[in-house]
Amino acid sequence: MHKSKEQTEAIVKQCAEENNLSWDDINTCLTDGTVDALLFANEEREQFIKPKVFGVPDIRFYDIFNMDLMMAARENLVATICNLINGTKPSACDEEFLNVKNLKKPKTC
Image 1: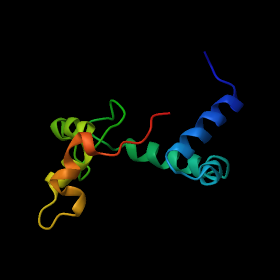
Image 2: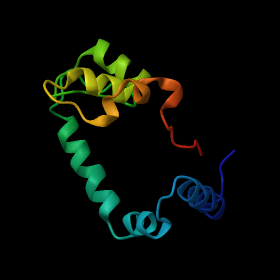
Image 3: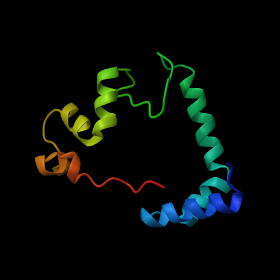
């Protein structure tokens, strides 16, 4: 069942509020051409990605496709990034933050 524009807008506003995001910023992005420019730029970039994007999210590090890294990042993005950092790591990489149960996940809308 398709939702009306008003219903969709109400859902997006609620989602933005629950995740402490500015509805005004989101609405501006949607109405001033920014979203179209971003989608177009992404589409142009995807033409050169090998292998082709096969699902969303398609997570790549250093513009290289690696199925194991992508699956790990889908499970725990922070831990995957922390494992790729050489040298001093930020506090987000401390063990108490890497436990999936402790990660603050955005509310699903």
